Image (cartoon, rainbow, N blue to C red; front, side, top):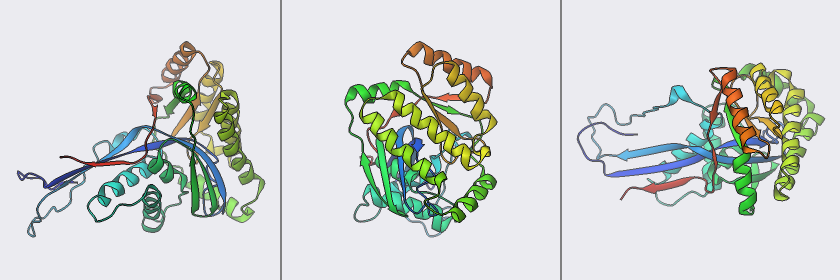
Length: 310
């Protein structure tokens, strides 16, 4: 955010927050689930915010200008949460005191739910604030604890090597099907089988990865995607199924439709143990449609980062 002009800014504040992928247990971190369990992974590319602070000019018509340079090129879902976390972190630097990662996440969640009146769970914001690989337990909506998995480097590096993020070519927008699913789940109660099935995949994901069991992690991803499909078949789009079939043909161990599912968005793929098979899989996916894109990712060692230029 900047006021254009020749003046030199008084302060320049930067922030960056990772995005969330592979949210096994998603949908259970919501008001209608009441309590939930989610496993997720924070990755780069991250959302970036830069604030330039200028002297106050009472007669200046444009006190705040926002440049959303890549607004039309949003390659992955969950960026809205990451952008909100990065923006709140940067703005927090302008005030006395500092918010904790948890406080930043809940402020970002409040912006989406209370100010923008959108349906939102809490796991996206928590993942962007904390980074890393997380097991999130929501005792009672929206109160949650975050346990970060501490893994040996060999497991961390192997997970990073195997993961792929495939963008389907359209920004995530499936509000109608989501509203239908929410209405059904709200009436079914927080312990209905559909939600219970999703909760179980979070624990299985955590336990498998802690054991270095990539086959187990892949099965949990598949179970979660199948459970999403049982909520409503439209949550797994035809394009997502095309990517899944290619992943199967190239020996992938798992696949997860990111976020709530539906049209657009992206998938997380857990590739086989052979790098050349992963490369062939990615080539096949991008050849399938000009819209499908492999987004290079790296696991985030850190969550929200905020710093001021000297």
